[in-house]
Length: 159
Image (cartoon, rainbow, N blue to C red; front, top):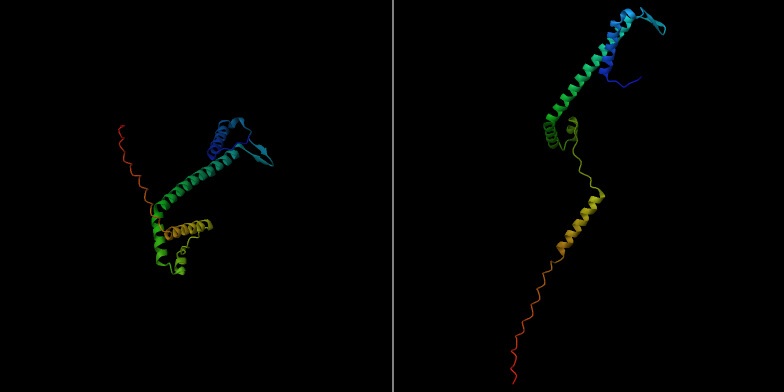
């Protein structure tokens, strides 16, 4: 009968158990053994109320945590552009002083590393550009002139 219940479901089940004990107190035994300990219905109610109290505290703490996390995320999102700009200014001001940048927890930007494929493509493009600049541009050949029309010879009349 093990079910994966939410904390709210567990709290409701504990409260229902308390309500049942209080409603049917006259029908329950005055005490009963649980292992080596004798327990009364009043002891069970006290334990259940303790569980409800701690469970409610957890629910409130989870709600407070959720609200705090949401507030933190909102604050960080709103302030991020200014913080980023400030960091860039600090890096620009102290680019030549890595010890001062270290005081801010920053480091000078490293030059980007190009992959072999990018370098090869760049070299091929540069070679093609050089070749195109060195080779003379061929002038378009003049179009062949259309043959001159042959004058029509009038036919001679038969004599």
